[in-house]
Length: 131
Image 1: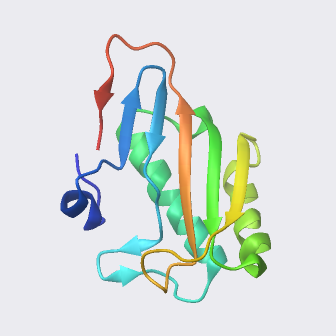
Image 2: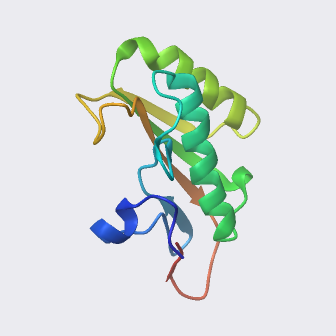
């Protein structure tokens, strides 16, 4: 299954891959069908990016409470609090390990945050790619 982002098909990657007992998401931004969502709002972009990544996991049969690791990349240190607040609202009861780093830039200058999720899915009979 492909995601909504145009990059998946163009650059040859999957939004989610299940490998053994893990489900991994690709880096996910707040990219919608017509471009970057919520320009200038790191909090809203983080909420959207987490939602897109969680929807992709759900589409692969992995519920949110299986997320064990999150990674957040921000382009400006001043966005750390807003992105962390969004993370807390989404994952506060799950409490995965988390990393937040500041990067020089993302692919589109309007993108303020990118996230990755890793979930534990338990034993499966064989690794399989999802979307």
